[in-house]
Length: 160
Ligand code: PNS
Image (tube, rainbow, N blue to C red; front, side):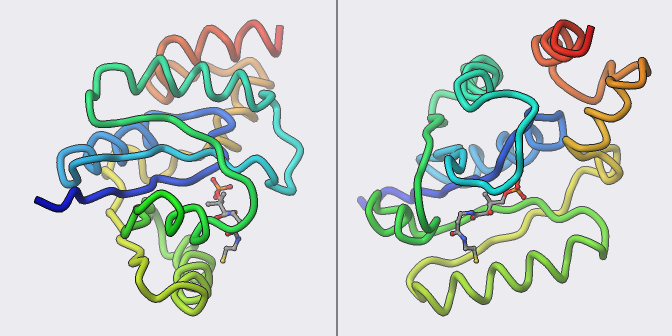
């Protein structure tokens, strides 16, 4: 039987409970899920790639069908190379829509065999983003419940 393989791409700087919710739901929908971290993202991250991979590895460990990987270059090229037919993205507010639509349409133009599937964010995570979590942590606010415990600890250490 064919294996359904999906990619959950992102920067994950750092992984939040909102990401984790999307990963968990993707894991229940597809046989094989690869959480893929872009190596060549233009933003300057707070956490170096290796640390983001460690954090993702820790929080994804309970899911037996989820692996964590990195990729260079175009996401759809990586999907085609690894036999993934689906890209899973989380959608929060309307403000996400325009950017996500642009990426989904461009990705389809580049590779129409790869479908983008959007999962609506869990309502409790609809206001959550890595950037806002970093800002709260940087300014000394509590990020408890917004990120996994292991990430909370690393954020505290990094910004101490
Ligand atoms: O978490 P982010 O920063 O929103 O993730 C964005 C990401 C990594 C999914 C996106 O930038 C991406 O797919 N980058 C890979 C390069 C690529 O394929 N670009 C064309 C997108 S249309």
